[in-house]
Amino acid sequence: MGLVSKEVAIAMAKGARQRLGSSWAISSTGSAGPTALDGSSPGEIWIAILGPDRQESVKLSLNGARQEVINGAVESALTLLERILRS
Image 1 (cartoon, rainbow, N blue to C red):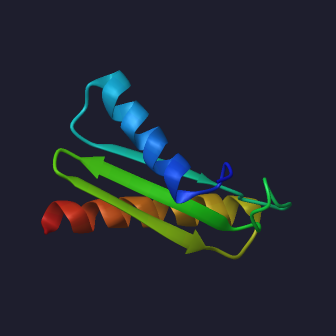
Image 2 (cartoon, helix red, strand yellow):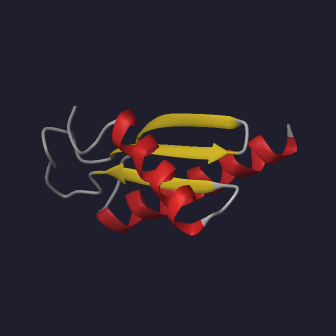
Image 3 (cartoon, one colour):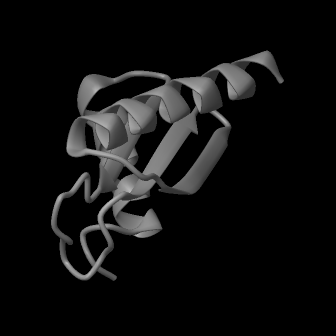
């Protein structure tokens, strides 16, 4: 398990929930590029969302310049949160 992994994303979200005393937390870890990070390809992103009785994680493979990858990860995380809250 490296820095860019499902396990790390989940651990980060759990830590945020505990530290902030919040009901929900979102985390992301990945390589926005232009170079690889800890063996992961540029554009490889893991997002985790934890709620009171829900845990979801998703792996993304995004293309583009560094800022485009970051923006895509943020948009994907918020879209996933919206889907979870509406279900």
